[in-house]
Amino acid sequence: MNQNNERVKTEVDNISLVDTHEHIILETERDECAKDFSYLFAHYNSSDMISAGLSPRMMEAIRLPLRQMRIKTYQRRKARRFIPEPTSYDMSLDERWQAMEPFWEMIRNTAYAKQTLITIRDIFGIEDLNRNTYRQLSEAISNSRKPGWYGHVLREKANISMSVVDIQSLEVNREFFVPTMRLDHFINVQSRLDLEVLETESAMTIHSLDDLVKAMQATLKYYKENGAVSVKTGLAYNRVLKYEKVSLHEAEVVFNRIASHLGEGSSWLESKPLQDYMMHQVIRAAIENELPVQIHTGLQEGNGNIITNSNPVHLINLFIEYKEAKFDLFHGGYPYIHEWATLAKNFTNVTADITWLPIISPEIARQLLHELIETVPGNKIMAFGGDSMTVEMAYGHAKMTRQLVTRVLSEKIAEGYLDENEALLLARRMLRDNPASLLKLNIG
Image 1 (cartoon, rainbow, N blue to C red):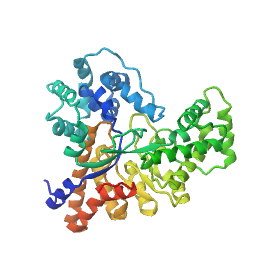
Image 2: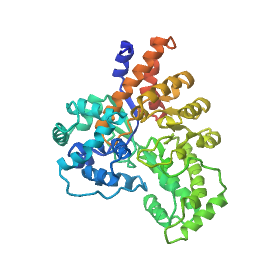
Image 3: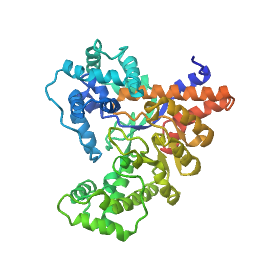
Image 4: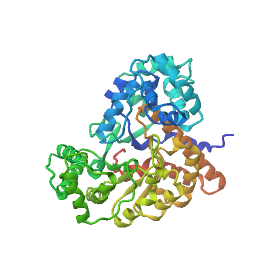
């Protein structure tokens, strides 16, 4: 039975959200690939279907219209992620649906699927995705490629004031987005080719470790001057989040080995001292530029990842070392949610951002938000980041987040833990004021 407090629900529904984290593609790219139902399977649903048994190659065949967009996205981010060749390049729309249908049925119980169904119903006016509706949905998606679509979804439907977008580009529509930028490619250096890429981006020659640090600093300065509001790192996909404080000499030894090697370069284990050193330099540069550092912790999107790499407790030495920094920890650290919450409680320089978690597990997000309200100062909790590649799925995530916040605050009022006025103040802080303050957004 719905026991939401109506005053809280009305207030939460009316808050114009500040969205801490998205991967929403450029509108021009969307118009190239939003052709059929597979457009809504660019991201998380695909991971669940592969987990259910769908082959990665068949998944690529099903979402073939998205292939070049996904490759371009990873190239911009300098991400070493393998996208398998599709099983077939000539499958019809009907054949692609028939290949996906049994796996879609298997994942309908997941929160990813629930987000998708909310999106389909509210944005495209179609009640369900099944063998009777996939053609209708495909036509609706194709017909949505028209001017003003992003404004319609983000402002009119989702009521999102501003979104921080992580696509490793400064060329974003500033009406809706502000960019966060990654420096992971300056940290994750393993070959001479990696250094050449950095030389091209920074327009600086890199002959020494000191040159590498200066190139990174100049690049970050350029990012900030052109509108970046934070530094994002997603290296939990590549390595453990433990960044030791290594000596300059240790890092130089690794750099010199890489710089003098014309082959494939070093292994991750060999290059770790250099990576550790560079992460410390990136944090120092972020402090200098007064930019917060957004850190992926917990579950990695995709399949077959090493979850222990992303345990947020690995970061404690950085929190202790760099008290002037602002660390925005993402995703509730799931499944390490209690450790993650403890970090935000204990460290002045750590904020708790549950972006993505409401569509991983609404129940875990509910439990965690209860815990955060009871343990973490209210100015350090951020409740919404859509973490989507498609603008429509950001809407679905926003709706699920509003439901989550409404439910938790209503429960807290019913328990007598908060009164209505306290709950309303906390709602506005978590959904708008806190991220706007952290990211220094001028949103009125």
